[in-house]
Length: 215
Image (tube, rainbow, N blue to C red):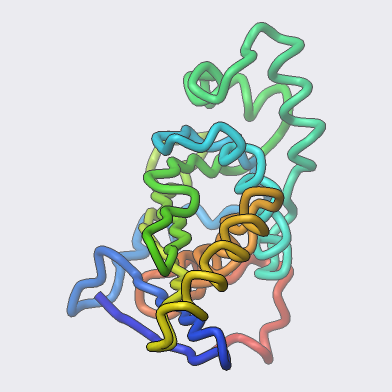
């Protein structure tokens, strides 16, 4: 597990980013290189967290990094509506859609399946922790092979300054702000960066990513 800590000023806000499942050896990209996808269909994630808003809040953060990595990504709103109109109103039912039909009707080379393990903010007396933990796998629509899979967890902590009264006030403000906004939505961007970055275990660049910028 890799941990990176960033100090963000007077409020003691800390960002801890953890990439789960890291091994000493790089990911085996044999299947990916044998069936490199050009287009990806992203389904709404399964949501194992207690935050009902997590499914579509997280979904909205995934397509841009995939597109920036050089893939054609089908518009998630269009895909979601299409699935619902064809008798699959929930993420669980969408995940059961036959790959052959997705390839035949939509034309996607691969499907990205994700599961939210954690999503949201937990509050304590003088601090809080916003956590997004996600598992994902990319599956080839022609062969059914898993081309790539990974897990990432991003956590944002709001810690104490040492002054109990100031910390109590700051905690109350933080909880009030977070209750009216989706703080985990921002943390999702960090989780996706960790999940997808093509170093050792991330997703490899797609065909539309400039060759001279690949590392």
